[in-house]
Amino acid sequence: MYTYEELKHFVDHCRRCPLAATRHRAVMGRGNLQAPILFIAEGPGRNEDRDGIPFTGQSGQVFDRLLSGIGLSREDIYITNIIKCHPPGNRDPRPEEQEACMPYLKYETWLLKPKIIVCLGRVAAQRIIRPDFRITREHGNFLLRKGVWLTAVYHPSAILRDEAKLPETEADFRTICDKLSEL
Ligand code: URA
Image (cartoon, rainbow, N blue to C red; front, top):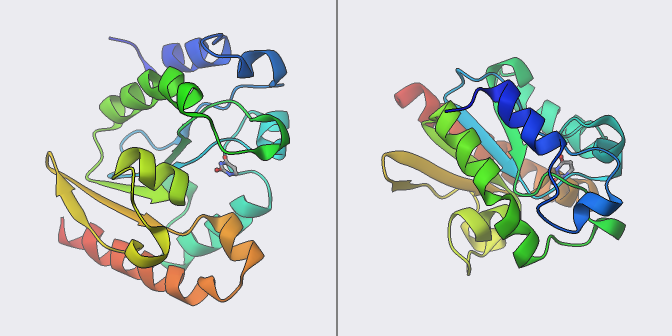
């Protein structure tokens, strides 16, 4: 059994896939290890690659606003990514990169033991919920798997590209907040 710090050390020095050669910093998830809620996005962007911290860029600001809309902050949640290293040109993570990184996500999930997992965007939803998950049709829906509630919302960067997605996402966050208070 490893602690969070030990796991972070493995992630920081990971060479399990070719992204190790192009990243500046690996980005371990972070937040409150006692939190009942785990957010999973797809992979670090350019800012995160520089800082080594998830969601420090513009998408992070959108995420923080959505959280504060339901009275939460980063101290109340844990956030991580499917892959821990920035893919060049911000392309989607390849299946083999996702596969190589899965042990870290599984271990983070095991450490946290969340009651709710929220996938941020299509890539995370298709990896965690179902390979054919359709984010436009299915965001905000909940399903119970092995005692954990799973849901997905639009990725904050999708909201930056299309503001019309903001009200729906705020509504999804309110549903998440209701779910949290039920549990
Ligand atoms: N986008 C992601 O999917 N993850 C981050 O950490 C930052 C931006």
